[in-house]
Image (cartoon, rainbow, N blue to C red; front, side):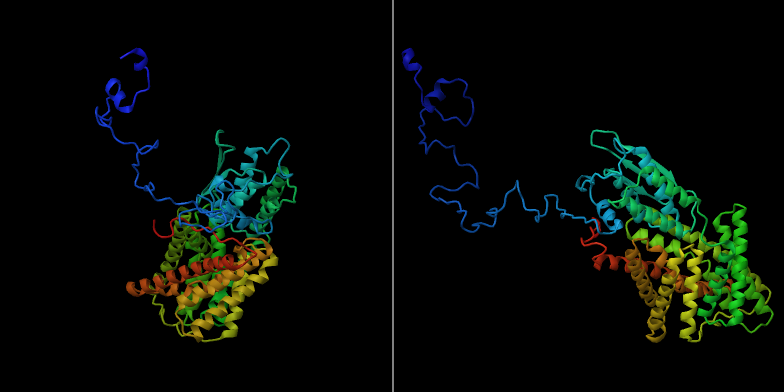
Length: 553
């Protein structure tokens, strides 16, 4: 073979013979001439169209020919905004007219990358916000809210609103029972800035709580021009302000609260005065213990002793009064309803660590009350006091007196919580409505007390959330005092009395009933608030984003 013939293009069969590089087992053997069907490779896929079947693509003017074909109007690069994004989250639109609590709560439940960027406003300082000072202001505001009894979710929403108002959108607040922390990362390539603050003192002052909410609302308003210095000044004014009510007013309110509670369980004028004196004496002893630096556990223990001692003394003196009503009225002023509602609310919103800590605090307070009352009941039993557990079970139905007593109880409870004077009337009416609902269901409809309490507490939460959203304020001042008439004071007393008389089984049954009533109150208040958020357009036009673990996985 000449050199020219050797350089001619050879067939595949010839190349397989002369080309030593072909070592694959799929190469054609020498002498086998396989017919070629064309220039295309062999059909090896099961999804390939068989030979002889020609399927023309659907024309653009016609409808979609297959369930797997894309719509004719669909473009992957320019998808319509109504379509759900690829990550599966709906498009969230936030309007400026909504309360900042709902807007911040919605964004907190979104991943950082999906949050809409804040608009640049005049609040930012020249050259950008001072990140450490903004974080410090945020922590101080969160400390006041958490110490005042606000729920963990609302505290996080307020902290996020403060940071976002100064342009720090990539921040993550974290709230536990005693620790506040916040982290801000300007970008993915920069180091995060983290700050924390410990809550060491807790005080009930709903006037200060309302002032903090107004400050956060002003910071969240895009039309306001609050600088860092102005926000710090207003925060300092809140800390320096005195409580709205003097000490003697608080002590008198404690006595009136106990007297009103005694009327709810069937007491008369003598019982009213005795319960008021016991509660005021207990309040003064608790203030004395607080001034000596004793923990709150011992303050509750000491405050529970005077009402029980007065009731036992009246029994030993053969005075024709219901000692159980005196002791029950004194317990109403001590039951930690505020902490219980906050603890259950944190648990229902997913803050389980904070909820467990709050409920543990409630348990310690309750144990302190139990210890104080049990000591006096045991002394009374040893002295021969005839304390009848059935003495107050036959409560006389006096609807008008009881409604008036429930409103007085809510009024005095609002004073003890240091509420603003403008909110006292609303919460007083809310307490009267709560007792009316409870009385109509339990006394007239003969429905179980737990269900009646839950529904009445739900009405309290609904009305409280309506008033709060109307005024763009916290819902606590409108709900906490209104649940005062529903607190399980009588069930607690009867359980303690049975335990003091060595009737442990009956005592545990009554204590369990008191715990069920307390949980019904807390869940009802939270459910009423959630219902108002779910159906009111003023609160949230978008549906609330559900948690991922709603079905156990």
